[in-house]
Image (cartoon, rainbow, N blue to C red; front, side, top):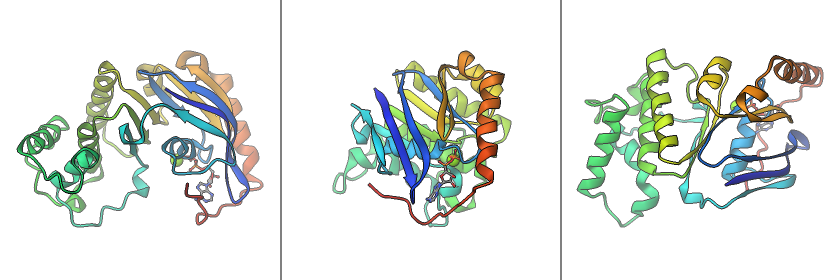
Length: 245
Ligand code: ADP
Ligand code: MG
């Protein structure tokens, strides 16, 4: 269960989310949609507890260790020297612990996850040498190992080729079949209509929240766009003052 009560999140007094309330349906696939700068990433970070609300709250009974979070690709540093298999194994970090060591069965699970995302044979490749599509597959393999109840994905298909997108969408459906809750920031209307039960449409304020067919309507999308156009006049962007919880 994840619920948002009258949530306001600000960066240096500029609200990125303004009085948002609603409840995510457990076990469903929910899309978070809205124009650029509408607060989608801010909502995911707030659910993760990475940002401190200026008002209201996020409530969840899912322990932090059972929440998986895939940040927007642009926020991930992959210049560090790490092999694909080790990067995937990091997904099990929470359950292994510092002294736990990596068991043979865990290695086998990591290799199975690498296989599932279509990267068999890449186990020893440096992550920095992968294409962005291959790297996104690695991150999904890592999520497979994490065994999370709640999975937060920020633009998981951005700049992905069609084949990778289809493969990762299959995984998301598999997660749903396993009873996991998935919340994903997405951009493609047709994709959301086809695959996501629920949609949250944001424009800093909440435009609509509910079943996708009722939320992702032309009037709602236009309203979100109109709200976004009104911000441009007063654009005031600063990227250095995230409030860390
Ligand atoms: P989205 O993911 O929908 O594109 P974000 O949640 O990233 O939107 O950002 C919402 C608004 O908050 C934008 O106007 C953005 O410029 C601003 N913002 C995001 N992160 C920061 C930050 N660290 N510092 C200041 N402003 C920020
Ligand atoms: Mg974003």
